[in-house]
Image (cartoon, rainbow, N blue to C red; front, side, top):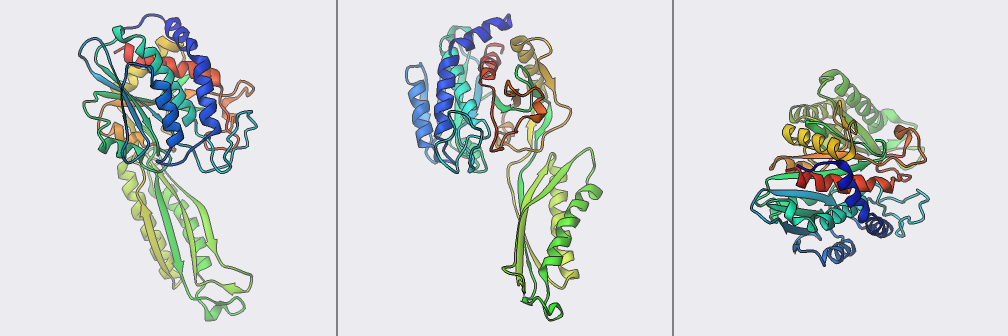
Length: 394
């Protein structure tokens, strides 16, 4: 067991400047999906002088780096995601994205930089742990299913437990949080096309207008969640995109809407899917229309293992200080493909507080996926130290 928080934080501070520079470079040059070649090259350059066995992915630009301790022991996987979001940044940071339509607005640049820092510290302390540390740098977290691809390529071979950090500006700097059991939600997508019979807007009786049917469906889907789903096993349906019609005097033949479905149990996930099909199909019939319902399966529920959550809590208190670990009262409805890893090996994902220094109430900070999202880079010291602590405290 490591003794004393100052040692790990001091060690993390020793690589802080390099970590910040690395993060800012990635932030200015975001890459999307499974193909992050520049980011991969920067990671390989940063790891080049360390005593690591390094492999790159075949179907994606991943990096897997193994560090062996001095004796046999468990293999601990530490994961960071590398991809950005397809959006434009408006944070006014001096190192904003240089690529319009691409932005590291979810903190993956910080995740990658912190893991680089942890690799450097652990490489210097191989005598302090037994077994192996596997550093997993994964593209394609933002909806491209990078984690299951890396699993197919063997990233979990002989892994005994896994750990990942996700930053959030909505927790104060200096704190970290997680919970046992459901931690983040599943991420399915609904797509519905409603077909009627088009015609002149002045003669709706000669047409079959799909717009009222679509409106009724969207409203009824909200009711289906609130009236059919157990409040203590929550679900969420958000309709986020609607298309219909071309001008003021034409009733369209078809209209379309889509959105996201979030659940924190597989039982509720199945029930919500059934409800969506039933509601949309029956409302379409009531309006003499037809409904084509497509449900695309996304990431599963991210479920933390109870013993690993407790272990992280102990490491957090020992590393960051007493009272710095927060037990979340409920899951959050965001999603993560780290869920696939936790389906196969014991592990835990935790949130790291990175609220910007100039914002007094972390709940007022621009959240992840906001075009205005910023993070407190000083908090990356805590993330580096927590990665190292999850290995050295084994």
